[in-house]
Image 1 (cartoon, helix red, strand yellow):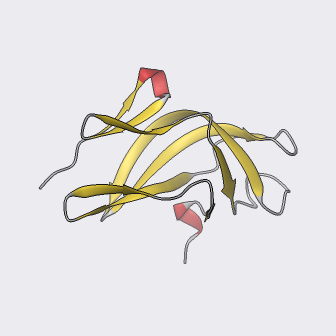
Image 2 (cartoon, rainbow, N blue to C red):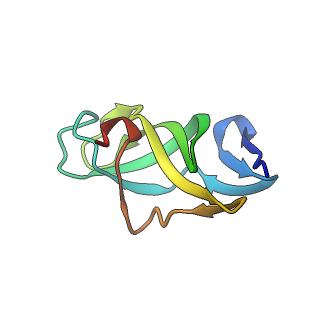
Length: 105
């Protein structure tokens, strides 16, 4: 079973199977020391540029800024959910620390 992933409204939403599931203007906590010097980045997503699914994990490439220090840019591909048994399950982005996929080991 396939799951349709699309970016809508000029990068403002991630759509999963024609339902808006992830939006910009969310505050995410990131473990991304390459992005800025803050211990944990308080990142406000401003726009999505790409969505991908690697295996079962769904990730977005987004640009935005750290609200603590003001650094702006792209922190990498950030996981936002996963596909399980043909259905999307979003991660609790408000209560977990996200790590760019490229940093995982």
